[in-house]
Amino acid sequence: MHKKTQTEWENEMALKILAFTQSELYQDLRFFHSALCALHPKADTSVQTFATDGICLNYSAEQILRVFKNNPRFLPRAYLHTVLHCIFSHLWITVGKNPQLWNLSCDIVVEYTIDHMAQPSTRRILTWLRSQLYQKLDENQSYISASVLYRMLSQLNNDMILSLQTEFYTDDHRYWPAHHSSAPIPQNVQQQWSKLAHQAKLQQEQYGAESTDSRQQLVSRVKAERSRRSYRDFLRKFSVLREELHADPDEYDLNFYTYGLRIYGNMPLIESVETREINKIREFVIVLDTSDSTSGQLVKNFLRETYQILHQREYFFSSCKIRILQCDDQVRSDQEICDPNQFEQFLTQFTILGGGGTNFCPAFSYVDKLVEQHVFQHLGGLLYFTDGQGIYPKKRPSYQTVFLFLNDYDESKLPPWAMRLQLEPEEFDSAQIRQGGIYEYQTGKRGN
Image (cartoon, rainbow, N blue to C red; front, top):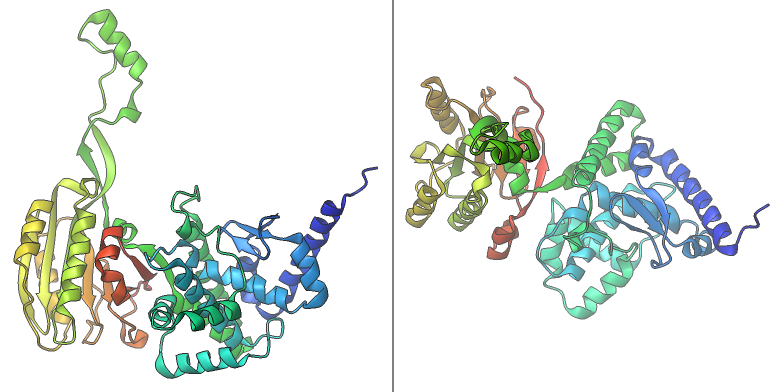
C-alpha cells in the first residue's frame, strides 16, 4: 500500500477544497456553472495564489490549505475573480500600455463587479479605499471598463497606485497570453470563453423571476465588458470564400511529381492543382459618420488602421472592391478603392466632408441602390464608423452591418439586426494602429 507523501496529501486536500469552493459559488450563481467548471486545476509551486492561462487554474496547495483554515471567505472571491478575468477576456487583451496599470485596471473591474453582486459566498465588508473609489466610479462613469479605468489610473501618483495594487491584488497574471505573445495557447480558447459568457447570459434569462438584483448585476457586467478581438480578426468575418488561381501544394504529392520529371524529362506524373479556395475580402463598404459630433482625427486614424490591415496582401483577392462613403444627414462622397495603392493615395488626399446632423438611413439607401444595380456581386458587409447619435433604419438590409461606436451607446436605440463594435478612443494612437488595435465585440441578433 502506497503511503502518501505530505505533498500528495496537500494536493488531494486542495482539490477537495476547490470542489467545495465551486459548490458554494454554484449555489449563488447557478447560471454560471459551466464557467466555474471550465478551468482545470493544476498544482503549481511557483505561484502563491491562483493563476490561469485560460485553460488551467494554477494553484498553490499550501496557500489553499492555509487560507481555508484562516479566512475561508477569501477563496470563493479569489476563484470567481480569476474566472471573471476569463469571461471579460482580460487575458487576451494587449493594449501596449504599462502592464502594471493595465493589470490593476482589470483587477478593479473584476472586484467592482463582485462587490456589487453582494452574494453570500463572496460578500465582504468594503474598506474605506474601495468605498471611495467605487463612489467616484459610480458618479463619473456610466460605463466601467478596464480601458476607462486605465485612463483614470494614469493620472494618479505612484503612492496611490501602490495603495490600489495592495488593495485589489487577488490573483497572479503571469500566465496571461497577453503578457506572453509567443505562448503556445490555442487560438480558440478566447472564443470558448466568449461562448461561456453568452451561455451564462441565456441561462440567467431563463431563470426569470428567480433572478435577484445582484445576479442581474453580474449579467449586466458580462454584457457590458463584451469579449474582445482584434480588428484584423473582425475583418475576417467579412471574407468571402472564392476560388483563386494559385498552385496549392497540399493537393498533390511532390514525390510523384518529381519522379515523373526524372523519368520522362519534362513530363510530371501529376499536374499541380492551380486553383485553391481561400477566405479573403472581396467587397465591402465603409461608411464614415462625418457629423459635427465626430472627431475628424479619429476618422483618419480609423482609416489608417484599416489600410494597414488591408495592405497585407493575403487579405485581398487579385481584384477587390471597397466603397468608402462619407455621410452625415446625407451621402457627401463615394470613393471606390480597388487595390491597396489606390487606398494609400486616397488617404493622402482625404478630407472630412459634412458637419451636419446624423442620419444613418441615407447611407443604407445609397448602398441598397448599388446592390440593386448589381454594382456589388458579393458584398461582404457594411462597417459604419459613428458616435451612435443618429436615426437608424428600421428595415434590415440584405447584407451584414456593423456599427463601430466611438464611445458608449444607447443599446435600446440600436436595431436588433445590427452587430456592434465598441471602440475605445485611446486605442487609436499610433502604437495601437501599428499593432492592429483591440476592440470590444458583441454580435447583434438577427431579425427583420
